[in-house]
Image (cartoon, rainbow, N blue to C red; front, side, top):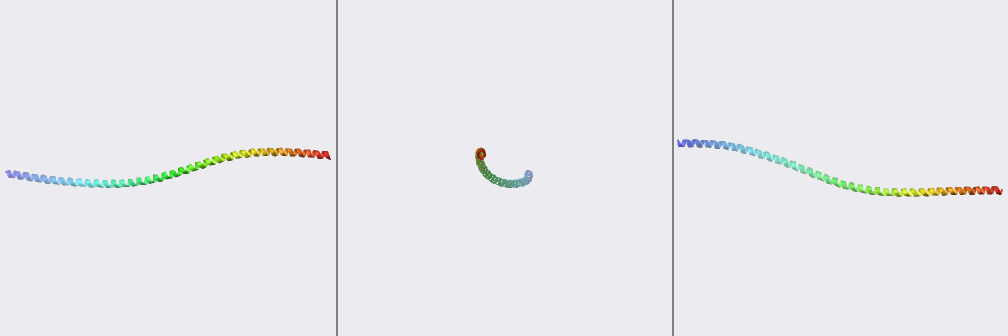
Length: 134
């Protein structure tokens, strides 16, 4: 009976080993499936990362282009401000020249009026002299 018990125990052990082997095989299949899923996730994340990296590179190029445009516009603004400043100076200068010419014009009009008055007086004197002479 000693052998029989040993045989039964061996059979039970074999059954347990076979059962455990089946469980291990199932677990290995599950783990392999999980590994495949993780690899797929990693691939998707790498693709997403590459896409995001590409978008960032594109945005950086756009930012650099915009920074160059800003610099150009700032230079344009600087030139416009310089020209406006020159125009303001010329405007003030022309206004002063206008005032000066207006003053000269008034002086000339006064001188003209005085000359006309003097001429009228001389004319009157001549008329009186002619009247008195005849």
